Length: 261
Ligand SMILES: [Fe+2]
Image 1 (cartoon, helix red, strand yellow):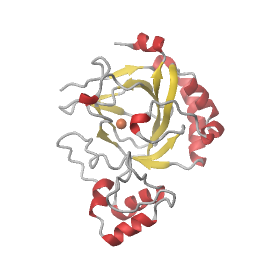
Image 2 (image 1 turned 30 degrees about the vertical axis):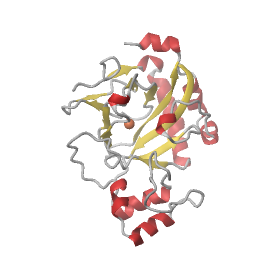
Image 3 (image 1 turned 180 degrees about the vertical axis):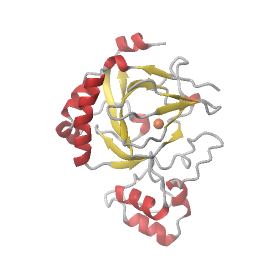
């Protein structure tokens, strides 16, 4: 099957929203802030979540699978690195992304160091206060104190984007050589309309791609775009750090009409 895309197009190029100089200036602010702020990992369990393409042959350890096979001692070590305010109590809990108990950064690091789990996005920062539930990413969300203090220019830029309201804003960064594992954010059969969001990549080139069922890939056309996240998508490896910021929300109606297929 071809990509669903946005009205059949794999990407909607939104580079008319910001010129290179604007994005370059944001990159100065963002990379300086990232050097100072605490960031986390994300990803690392796409296979266990069942959101990878059929026949996907990536054998790198997935934390959902690793957690299911830990012996009691190893599980106790894992649990001891949890958050006392929201502890891991037993194996029946859904742990990690979109689960009952989020992973702490110490647990992520332990899964990586002790069990070789591959976390594709090793620089992850949420710029808004959100529930963390994927299904609530378009709900109105205020910026975090860190975002307001360390990323004022970026916050101003995001606020000026053509949204009726802004939901979750998150920064997804990959270390040199890492790739973003191919996955999709939802099942096409469950989607009535493409989720509204804008992605922009202020720093070095980041090659996000969408992939059809035959494995044919189309790389994002510019530094600012929209795509259908219910299509398979991933990020090609490159020998440098790169990142993008994804802004979810509800599009301004005039903008939605302007870019509608
Ligand atoms: Fe995704």
